Length: 86
Image 1 (tube, rainbow, N blue to C red):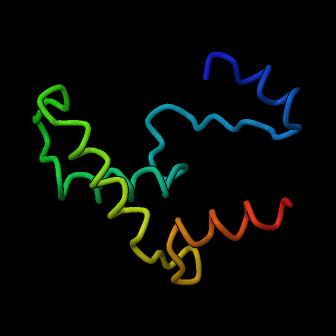
Image 2 (cartoon, rainbow, N blue to C red):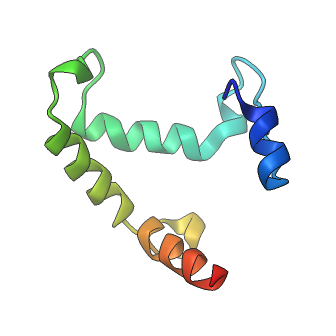
């Protein structure tokens, strides 16, 4: 996020930085880390994981319903958001 100021100026969206050592301030991030650990145990080097495997995991996670999205998937919410822009 080195260019966060440029991003904010270009999009008029504020960037929020959590305080160090306060994981409760970034719940979705911590939840996603937990989901990723199901596929990639702690200590595994992602350098040894193929791009195809990474893409497959991303697809599975993006097609998994989330309580925070009213049990829609991130992919569904993304499509709705993009469709509403047109």
